[in-house]
Image (cartoon, rainbow, N blue to C red; front, side, top):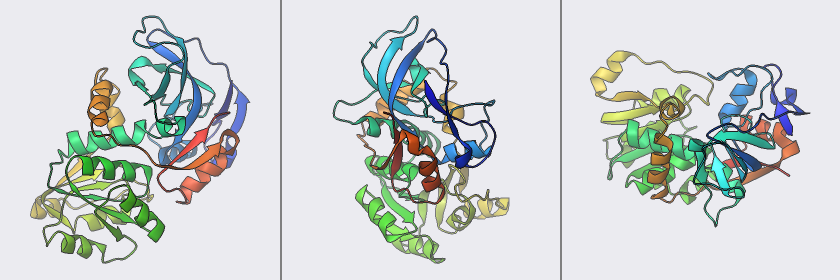
Length: 321
């Protein structure tokens, strides 16, 4: 099969397409022929060797996919060859095929495209784990979502609204703020303005945000501590800004708020039943990804460069021939 491969840490331009042999489908696995693969910011970090997961060389990145089941491993029930699915492949998304544990496979809704399916698993499962399990977001609370026009931001906005929260989203451009409003944000703020924490406090009548969803880190994290409510929860999702922030513990003490890590994969993947349970819960909220950027298989380098330069709004996917 054809696959994009990382042979050494580097920029996206160092990726190469080659012929790779896929092992036989194993017990408890299904083989999926990909029609689309989701693109995530951590794919870029993984190519550069800046992500916490560093597979041995050579490897094929791409953590989520959608396609058709081509083969079933021993012991697999409930699926058949030809079923349309979306899946957490974790690697090999940027290849033609992958062997995926059956616990990581979900049915693709009949009215969804493969592109939508490939855009779904990472961002919605991350959002549900962070907002539901870690922050315990309640109806009537205010949720502040940073990078509201990104994939993870879009999912957090949609899930937060479905959970009954008032959602304030931040984004850097008018186009991105318009997108955040379209996917459900009640209010949008330009986080390039240094006074944005004051806007949050004004919108919440001085109380601040009950929950902050922060995939950005850096200044976004620092300034969020100025507009978080007493007994608020600041969710650490990632560091897309490139700077890992730190905080003086006395600030946490004085303002009475929690700083909460939300590493979805570390919690979900060792628990065989959790993904299905989470998927069932998420599906009752009916979120649907907005895929504004679709790239041909041969355009992976350009796609990752667009992610790097913040040119992607919503979710981007790689289409397989």
